[in-house]
Length: 316
Image 1: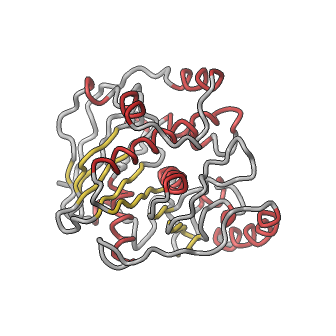
Image 2: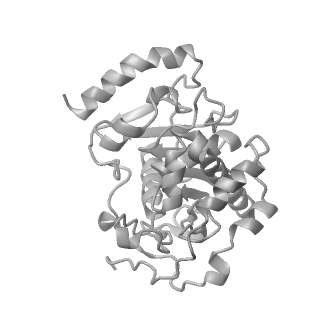
């Protein structure tokens, strides 16, 4: 039995239970044509930015936790960013992308798991008692970054996107702030469990794209998948969690890819989040972090600041 067939079987068996429990998904609300172009052109741009925000995105042991800022590419340039690496205050890595060809739009993209902290956030989707505060705090930071981008570009239509854990963050923020966008190969933030539910009241035009034979999703994503998203998933052929063709593709296949940050200055990049969250406080509906939660977050921050040589993009 293939992974896709097994996944279909799981979905058929668990979907009725999800519907009985009141899961929020009803229909697939697709993106409209907009300032980037047609729906397909918009999804292609969102998928590219969802990959570019990873930086190089190496998962090798020797690269784990290194400074790896978002990349520019495909005509999109990072206008603002927060970088997450070992020892930094940020629980998310995100970039705000703008393009001279699409002056009426901006894309906020969130990175998926590329660090110990990101791994804990993923773990919290299934074990909230161990690491639940981590993902909630990440959604709060992601919310603040979106609000900053919205304030910086009031005349642009802002889309939101992400891949894997980044797609989870994008979908959560979209539901709190009514932002259109798309997530790729990501777990859903809705659940009946109050400790893990990370969705707001809005249901924007936010598309969810999943590859059917993705082994990581089949094994780890909460089931039923259709009932954990704010919109019905759109399924694609494929067996690589890191890709979702034709939207999320390898950076080697993209044009004009280059670093967005060339000089690593720890004085300006390590402590970005405190001021950001004070200036742009997250949505009040996103639960606060209590004192017990802070103990978990402090434990996560035991890593020393990683000032090793940043990762260098090799495809210039």
